[in-house]
Length: 357
Image (cartoon, rainbow, N blue to C red; front, side, top):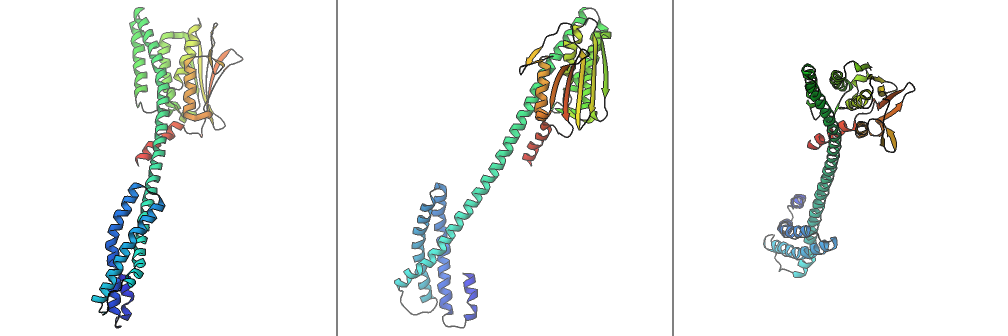
């Protein structure tokens, strides 16, 4: 209405200027008031989610009577406010009705366009949110699997140590039992610190393994000999927590403990060709048994199975664990991890934080 009136200002000296302004002003004022009725109809149609054909039919049928009303108001204003002395001609009213109807139909089209835009935007946001929730759920599931495997190993070692302490007490060796309790407390303190950290450096993992070996050295005395050969660069590599301890425990339980004279355990960590390689070797007992895993004979039972699963969970197919009997009669466990590959678990941990942002 404002644009129409402003555009007609150059003709304000013409006799029909007031009649034009009265006609256009009444037309747009009735269309504005009619838009409230159209809003009620359109809002009801939107809530009912009717088909597009019904929406168009309802809007056209509603806008035409309002257009007739607008045309009548326009001619009445032209006659009584614009100073045009003539009777109200209903033929002219019905002829002008499509103009008012078109304004209301355009308003209805804009209403549904805006509604559909916001609906699509909301759906897009919900889709992004659902994808983030799915990623968070996957991350939590992976984290729970890793922790379940980790906690499955800890009680086994704890029970063995407590049984050893009990044996020392029964054998009247309180000093050695006290020493083992002290080592156990130190080990538990290091493993229980920051329980949410499932990925640590190899240096930290070696430190925990050395605490475990200190306990076993109390049990076995001179029967257990340990050799460490650790590359400085390898010590900075990220690995799953409690990765080596169960392997060393297997080496002692299934190898050293079954040898009357005891034996040696060697842990070697090196980096070569952008890959971390950790090797754990020990002498085999005279009588040995094997556990079947995926159709292959494996030494060490549950420990090897769980460590292999944890590597798969953390590094995918590129985290490998293999075993072999060396030509010089040793049993060797080899862990291979690409240095350029970040643990999958540490990557997924950032997704919940992204979701919160």
